[in-house]
Image (cartoon, rainbow, N blue to C red; front, side):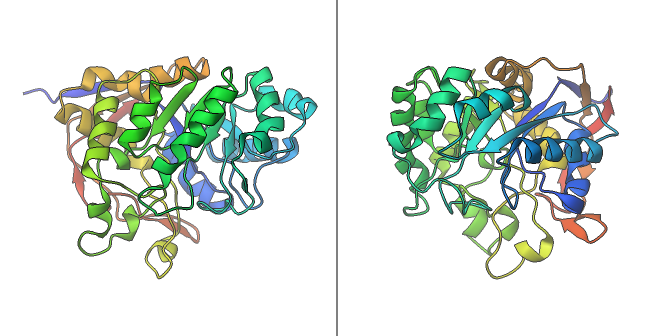
Length: 342
């Protein structure tokens, strides 16, 4: 009997952390091998806030991923005081600007202290006029399970105040976000692989699994169901964004565990497994490519990933020089493998 195969065309990861230096050299190719492009987060230390830093980082990414057909779509770290002239000058070099509430996640200490629309207005008004999308890590500093839900009124306030501004709710984790998605024409969203699969029970219901600890934290079964239902239907305003966030093993398996799940090398295989399980393979190309192309108006070089239903044992760890990172499903067997890349 012939093995079952499936092709994904021009896959995109619309929320990705690549870090820098040797960690970039380790994890960059693990995305560029199988993806056509990715939206790269700007929360380095220091964050990307100037044109010089942006172009330099993009060049380092291209050098790390030089062996592959891959386009890094870079972003700026949001500041309240970007001038219209500065944004007009950098517009063609960025795909969007990423807003982090201060201190809410990794390397966000210099993020926005106030989410009041009037405080944000100078930069948001310029972005709206220039057609620059706004990507938001939407969490408050409230009780950890309620942080995204509490942020919903802020999304609404920005959507109402700037109806021409394209707003992407990043790595959504709740049914509340799914419900909000259809309320405003200018709201869109990304969702991760892990939030389609796990709940908080998988993280802390038994022995603590630090490699599944992330921010936003995984939520309740009903939230996962709402996310999965929307993804399986390829909701046109929803895109795949892995939020694959590498940290060295010693920073995950320790007291004060770093937040982030590393999924880049297995993302397409596990998505194929998941969509096949739910008889929705016909929707996978839209979820992982076509929706993002339409939302961000992207034109991509042709790239086809052929997968085969054949067992693949996930490596226990990925290493380069002194850097290492443990992937989701480390040491476990998944049912799909990459057969070819063209």
